[in-house]
Length: 483
Ligand SMILES: CC[C@H]1O[C@@H](n2cnc3c(N)ncnc32)[C@H](O)[C@@H]1O
Image 1 (spheres, rainbow, N blue to C red):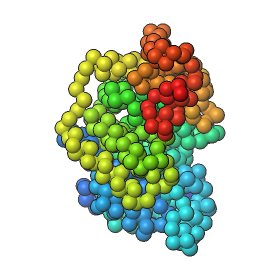
Image 2 (cartoon, rainbow, N blue to C red; image 1 turned 30 degrees about the horizontal axis):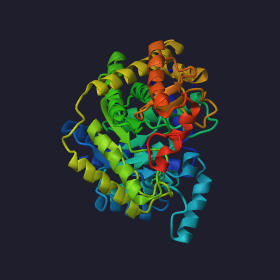
Image 3 (cartoon, rainbow, N blue to C red; image 1 turned 120 degrees about the horizontal axis):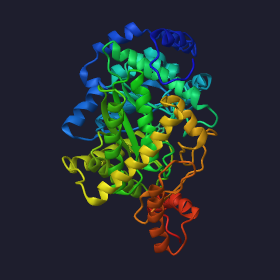
Image 4 (cartoon, protein in one colour; image 1 turned 135 degrees about the vertical axis):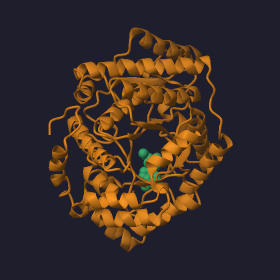
């Protein structure tokens, strides 16, 4: 399959599908006709797409945790606990790390050892190994819409199985589940593999079943300038729309300055709408998701609840359709179901207190929206030019040249030349642009904001600011002031 920005024909899709379903024995149980019938038999209350659109219409922010364990019965117990005791509005199934690397043999062993140990020895739910029948048990035994959340460069088989089982949303994308998650998987490969997933969703849509797609907004979750994550989100949105995806949630990871975070969500939604319209995708149902702080967490649980609640309020005031909830065990590892539920309850408390409130506009907010949109436009215009009108080709060339550049990404295909740091009020700025094609006035604007911090701290604008910022929240502040 040659990479190009064009909707796959059915024969192209079904030809690749034969290989995909051979990836593990459970692939042979995927039957699309049966899956369509099953989805149509599900109550509307289990449709991710519908719940998101209803929330957007009523202007509320939904709360969704991350959660996943090795064995089906324990996973069902966990999800129902998060529903009943946590008050979750939407349910996940966070997939384990072996599945994310297509190491299904290791999953098999992990499942056997978890049975012997009587507890989960995998850090998530091994959906491929459980197969359609196993995943369907989860769908049948829970009462909220279900989404697979993972970090899988090649999620073709995983998506086939879990969507056929009745999951109605799938997170990820050819950039956002490659660059922050893999070391040496090429962009061409993951863009094609995620075109497959989007084409599968397009096939469900063409047969009357709406499946939500959610690119992974936060990327490395470490000082990613909003315009860089918004550019990636819009690109993955365009890639999905071209393959027939209709229900799309674009995401953003909290950076910490409230005005910038609200501006980022507002800019993301407005600019994505602009690009969908400009390129002829007029029937996209667009929603947004705000990820609570994705960086280092305090170990102290009371402080962790402070971080969680702060993220919940930013999501509500931004008007995001959904907020992804963190837990007070974030600094330790996979949370207990009690800690996970507590994170949701704290979040829901804040969402309820702020119901109907949105951050009203202000000169500072308008300025930040304008800056983020202008930076994002510089990046997207260059991607389009590099691809000579083909977004997919443009993405590959943009990473080769550092036009798209995600800070602190493990991928060898990421230039890593751009460096961010916070300004004096904690907004994330471009300290060194690398080859990110910002206009001169935007480069100057970023530098002027950083100069203000430098003056305040009595030090020059320096990479040390970036380092200090990375450790700051774990130490209890947002901006890494010199000690
Ligand atoms: C994107 C990374 C996030 O996913 C979270 N995460 C990963 N696996 C699980 C898991 N199995 N249960 C709950 N949270 C999880 C992790 O804590 C981190 O906040």
